[in-house]
Amino acid sequence: MAVSSSLFTSSLQGSMVTPKTLKCCTEFKCSPSNLSFQQSRHTKSMHLTHLGLLPSRKLSIWETDGFSSKDRIQCRAFEVEKAPSFSVGKKFQLDDIIEAQQFDRDTLSAIFEVAHEMEKIEKNSTGSQILKGYLMATLFYEPSTRTRLSFESAMKRLGGEVLTTENAREFSSAAKGETLEDTIRTVEGYSDIIVMRHFESGAARRAAATASIPVINAGDGPGQHPSQALLDVYTIEREVGKLDGIKVGLVGDLANGRTVRSLAYLLTKYQDVKIYFVSPDMVKMKDDIKDYLTSKGVEWEESADLKEVASNCDVVYQTRIQKERFGERIDIYEAARGKYIVDQDVLDVMQKHAVVMHPLPRLDEITVDVDRDPRAAYFRQAKNGLYIRMALLKLLLVGW
Image (cartoon, rainbow, N blue to C red):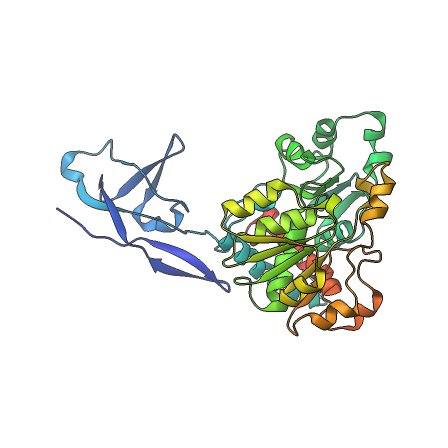
């Protein structure tokens, strides 16, 4: 006989998981007690009373082998568009944090909810012991202040401990010629999670492929900086009050800026976003990001007029020209530096609700008088990095 049924997916609302009924699509045969589905060449079984375990993707071919014909009934398969498993105690969906493309919108919203809870923990003088007994290794091959210290602070505020090397490029066995893979195999024997910054794009992916413990990319050369992008989007939501329909101006060294690359990837998760690129000719945004934005239907525009862009945007995201990326071509660096500066004249044309952001450190690309304006969000942005990184460490080590 034909049987109509209801499956549910869940969405995170605060700390509660609420059901949403999904519509039926194709028919299949099933047993009244068990279902089994085909996924990536592996067959997984589930009981009808555990529908919360359904995968967050479209269900395809449902199998019924092993059941007699009298046990079979006519059922309907359902298209599951979203089924995030964010309930307390469940494992985090990701094993490592390597690039911004790993995240979908639902996961971002859920991470931000956890970050908000981390803010409450940080403000509580008694702290937390969520990560008591865990050790984090910070392996930084490039200088860092905010990223390294915020990760270390995040770990300690959750009760964990830290093993650190401030300049692994010079003061680790890498100086003796040890490969990255051998370093990772060694360090994972001492810790439960590795946070790594490296001077080569793609190094974090290599580390994650080698390690059996979680790896967080804290910046890999001109590649990506996913935890920075997460805190940037978190900051935009808190400061502007929305993420859909925003206009963002990315300014400065866009060719070498891993922060702006990662942020551009994350902004594609939201609707009706427009991105403006403002940079000297020698450090324009690379085509791979432009092509990606186009493929995702995100409108973008290049401009040489910072004041005009600032007058249209909800966010002016300034970055420094990165001298370390120019090698011996100091002449090109000097030509690029100082071309676009956020100062009082730029503030004067910005909308009242708009904000100025910067991943820091800054040189002279934002004048110090801007700091007094309430729209200067960059130090609040840096503080938000603590909450996001507390959330990531908690999720990777103990789950939701």
